[in-house]
Image (tube, rainbow, N blue to C red):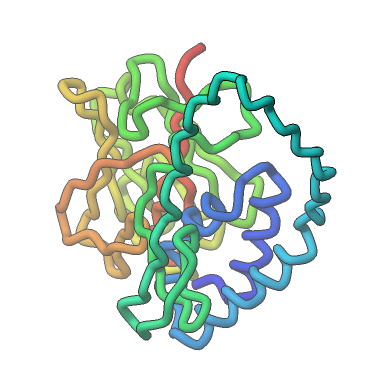
Length: 254
């Protein structure tokens, strides 16, 4: 499991690569939720201090002189009232009031917003454009599993295979997995020889993952899969295999 400092470092990397603060926190949400409350709160404070040094000061606009219309001038149409300000969010964990845009409670670090829709519009340093629908996987798309904290990424097209794509490690196994993690220290990180399987659903144009009754489990956005449970993967999801964490990316054919 990543340490709070590692998660904070990754947050800064995401911000520097074009993610806004909300999208960056949503991306790390699954890992942050696994931390104790005190460590979650510590990350929130680190984020706020760091963000306070990134914001440029707002320079007020010069005051415009007020012109008084003559008495016989036609009355200007009444302008619509500005929209009401969003209501603050009350943390269900500690009861503290947070700004409506906050993703995590400033007091206890509880995740306030669990919506992952921001992933469909995240800027990516890639020539391919992300899918408009974060669950849609086109016929010419490529699935990219990017290993957190490294430059390693696995690129597959499960829609072109006649069998499931098996993720695991080959040492001591008679069956060779399609994505072999043995050279990445998978054994020490709790990856089973036959750990997870990736399937393509041609009817719904989706990619799914299932756990193959592994010893240490498979997780999507921090939620553990039951053995043989099938879960739809979406662009931007976090897939954890044992203690190895991958970001799920869909690259559509141009």
